Length: 148
Image (cartoon, rainbow, N blue to C red; front, side, top):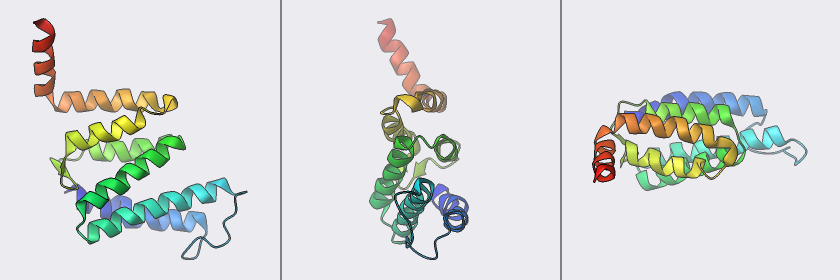
């Protein structure tokens, strides 16, 4: 399922790459405000680590909290590449539940976060459309209500 997929593919491998790219040796020593890319990478690394720790502790509520925090952070930072990869992985997952929540509902809540940044509206529109296609029953209900 997505939990293992997120942990294995996005988690440990990506964490290792981010850690290596950030050049930190196990923490955040040496990071200064004058190195925004390093701060950004280490912040993403910390948020992803929290997701993995929560998953290992089987705390699905915390997994969703940290996932929302990660989406909020990368949206705020306008990290379009990372946002695209994360949302695409979630929306294309065959799992119906992600971290114990219905995938469609989780994506809707994450997209509300993305919608808060005007510069990320394209992602909101693209992924909202994908969700609508995956959940045609909601569209039928809306269409029926509209036609009344």
